[in-house]
Image 1: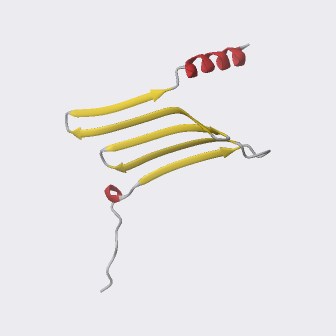
Image 2 (image 1 turned 90 degrees about the vertical axis):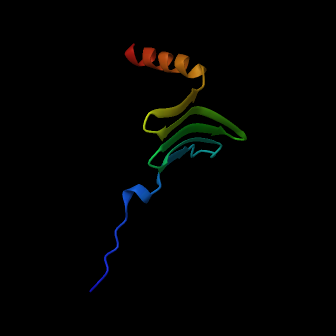
Image 3 (image 1 turned 180 degrees about the vertical axis):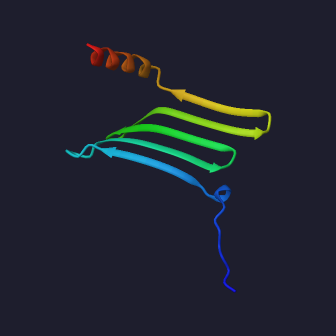
Amino acid sequence: MKQKKFISPKRLLWTISCGFINVSDASESFNMIGKVPDARNVIFNVWRDYEEIRISDVSFYLRLNHSRLITSKFEWRPEMKTEIMVCLFVIIL
């Protein structure tokens, strides 16, 4: 009799990453990564690299400590609100 192997989704480490690089000189890049290391944690980061400088745009962390306690952290650059509003204003006009 053959043995069948199954992969439990609870045991998998889920990671999604995305990166864009300026093709002309490769000095600028936009990066995004999201991780679900286990059933109780979620991590998401967005950052940009300009030559030697790294700018963190968004950082998000969520953790389920037990059935009634959730811990989270959300950080973003304060300038992002103004940048988004200007971009939306330009698109509308």
